[in-house]
Length: 338
Image 1: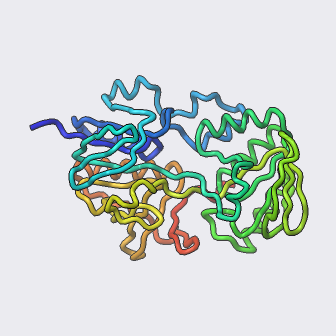
Image 2 (image 1 turned 180 degrees about the vertical axis):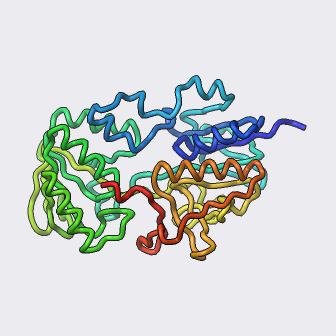
Image 3 (image 1 turned 45 degrees about the vertical axis):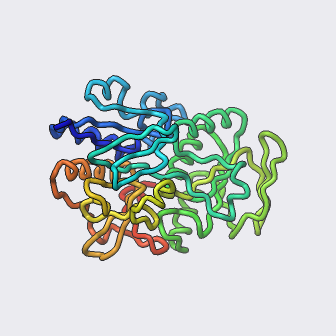
């Protein structure tokens, strides 16, 4: 009998933990990690520290290249999956290669969420999801001293702290799209606005942005329904959406993300989904929840690996720790850190 082949699509916290757990639990299967990115797995919550210069680039990454060779894990960077045939257990890559699998863990993560009415101005906004995004910030910050922050997810608050330490001037627009994944309320608005202002951030009170105009390379004018703001750069931070578009016709059950049961199993045998791309069923809630944050993703990756090897571990969290955000159940352990 040929050796089993396990494939992990993704290269983030959930994917790396899944690969490590598969190998550490004694599996002798061939383990392949497919990543559309050209860089190793990294710690996203450290990106603001990299931008501020508090840490070097190498500190961002989970493991050196040598680790994957030592553990006999085939890390294939720059390999984008574009489709899966679950009946024949095959993965199709962008360059037309086909990879077979016996077991599969989907950990494709998320991509920056830009609300529809901001997408017109998207080319003038910086996001922060990857080391490449961080390098764009580093380059831009060499020539600008003022930044306008839109949104209000954890990344925006972490980056604001880092930028203030760098002596930058920060303006922050807060409205109903802010604080993802935390539900917007007047109470949270007042608390966060007060906290920002106490740290020297100018909070701009408005409901919507009407127009964004690039005056020159380092000056942008933003017209809102209450005032006009001039800034050197705009950061867009509205949370993440699951990166699962290539799977919508695959036969998987997909809502906001890939629907899995409390064991992280999809409808297909030995196929699991974890991290930001998954919605996990919670028996007590009789509903699905999504996991946000580095530690949550790593935990799910470990559980999925164990279950692929034959365990029956449940990915359960206390119901009271799950928030209802616009009808989406969200478990996040870090939003109170700011």
